[in-house]
Amino acid sequence: MDINGFRVGYCIYADGEIAKIVSIDSENDIVEVITQQDIILMIHPYETNIKPIPITQDILAHCGFNEHGILYFDINGLIFSFKFNKDHIILCDRFVHPLIYFWEVKYLHLLQRLYWGLTGKRLDISLINVPPK
Image (cartoon, rainbow, N blue to C red; front, side):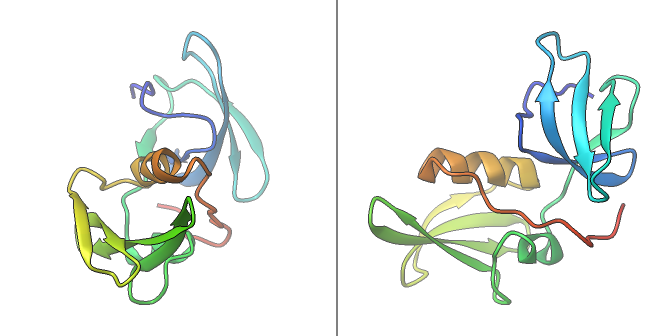
């Protein structure tokens, strides 16, 4: 798989197991990941089955989203929220009124990238005990 869109800290499936990217070498030949069992693996992205993690209600619950699929966050003192709606993410104001629809954000690493782009912070993800794919 082409890993050019992935960055350190992004979560992926590596051989069916959820893992977080720890490092990527400059040639994109070796990716170091840490699994849910705290095992560090050195993988070759073109030889290992690497896939993005689709966004689901269960995955979002591990990212701080509430039972209604909403995550509140602060940008320069203003409160915003992300709302998950079946197959896309919506940026909303603090009252959960839609502002921008992100139709292309269907995978966890894209949500991580969007959150970083808006807040300058990493999305807190607790993927411990998420079943492997």
